[in-house]
Picture 1 (spheres, one colour):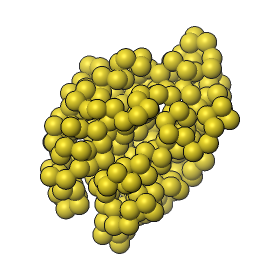
Picture 2 (spheres, helix red, strand yellow):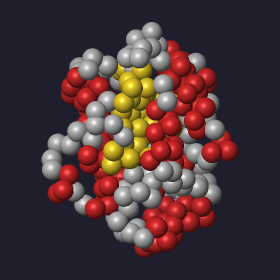
Picture 3 (cartoon, helix red, strand yellow):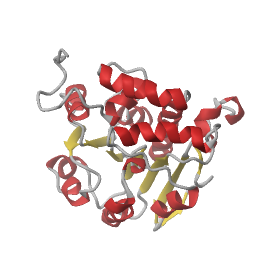
Picture 4 (cartoon, helix red, strand yellow):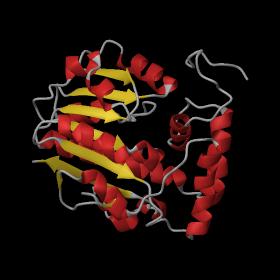
Amino acid sequence: MERPAWAPRSIDISVPSVSRIYDFYLGGSHNFEVDRNAARKAMEFMPGLPKVMQANRAFMRRAVRFAAREGVTQFLDIGSGIPTFGNVHEVARAAAPGARVVYVDHDPVAVAHSQAVLAGDADADVVAADLLGPAEILASPQVERLIDLNRPVALLLVAILHFVEDADDPYGAVAELRDALAPGSLLILTHASYEGIPLPVERAEGAVDVYKDIRNPLIMRSRDEIARFFEGYDMVEPGLVQMPHWRPDSAPEDEDPFAFSGFAGVGRTA
């Protein structure tokens, strides 16, 4: 398999990556045949997976615009993935010129491509780190340079927590990040769930098994389990809802049925 110029030498291009599979679903070009094969296998069980990812991105853009309108101009996007059109810094600055953004991801391709996209941008940067190391993220030079933790921050955890098993204590990591943020900060979150998927659970489990096979288990939590991530936050209306129902730009009934696969919400610290 030929290694493209954008692929860091340190990565094993024979092993599928969640970030690159996500990139494929969104129509991106920073993925390999091994990623495309895994994505196509998952889509044999859930053909609407690209629609789910598009719904995630659409919610993210609406939530970022909401944050900017609320006067929050600092954004910490953990699990940011491979940059695609309509990234957080682009959306935020369209609503609030001068907004500052730090992206965080542990995938070397996502980090390398983010560095290329952000080259020369003084108000945005990327950190190579993992959600499970909040202290490392918060102490990084990039966060210290761009994010004032004494002022409200919008923390984005979009389509990442369902890749963290309970044994790794995702609730603890989210709580540690919450406790480091100033009052008035926002948590912007999406999470996969069997609730809302327009398929029998047994069929959807086939797609989940694909992620298990590539050693990136997809943890499908219930709405109540997802709501626990918002402990310590006051929910912004309309609360924790299926993605198309969160402050939609168009009629939710016009959305593809797969867009309702999972939950989204925004919380504000007191």
